[in-house]
Image (cartoon, rainbow, N blue to C red; front, side, top):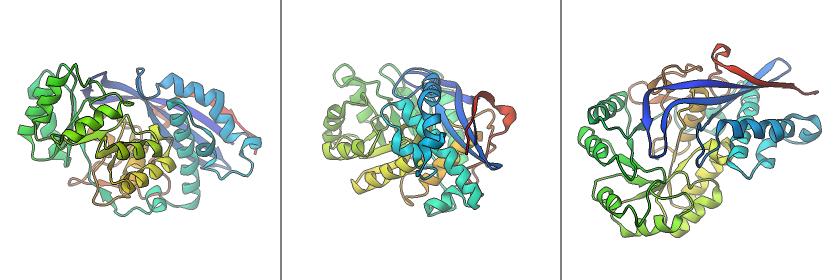
Length: 365
């Protein structure tokens, strides 16, 4: 068996300025697994700066030091189902979760290609296409904010998320609310403080928002619960959602009514599906979130988003709507719907010419 790790530079066509960083130049990691002439691919988008999620070098380090041998060495794999071997054994840190998600996806992609089955079909997808949401960054040029919101609406976005921070974003939210007729979310990425930023929070609560997303730090469920109990705005959580236990805690404390699920943060497709089920069972409204990944990763998000028809649309639009170039070439949305990947595998494989080899290993069968 041959295992190769690659990285791909991704450039956003319209940079998205958030409270803690600007999403402009990004990277995705790709893992290729080859056994008996059959390939499997996985993708995991990674952060460029320290924060709530793992950065590129951390994920690469965990893959090199722990995960690749754990997943592929014959002595470690004995008796383990192919795509579940890493899910069961790797846990503990954001980097481990992302590395596990990457390996799980590559193994599962190979299995599905071998069996001639698509991911959406294997998951029991309830639709052939799904709706999608869009994101608008904090920007001092309100004309650009309006233009981006209008462009996303023209593509068919059914909801817009506008980034906000303690110092900016309120005017952008007002512009978007005025420009579109779809629900609008304000996303603070955990940058607000309940006492220090009380005036900003009060101003946001006065707006007709679908919800206010992750206003406070990920671990601060108490402040989220107090805000939710005020009843002036619905609360959504993103960075706080890391496991089945976390969504049960969110529901028990009344900290939010909406949760964002990201497979790379949760540890992969299998765990994301578990958290989706737990969220629905707890009475929460889940949606599948993205990291500005390439087309392979987006195809996975689309398949997961299809599992709760009538639910909240996720960040599942093809990368051609936000990247200058998609190395995987996922099909663009059509008439406001993103078609699911229906060919064998998890999604379209990347073009090798768009990737840079990081490391390659071989394992005896």
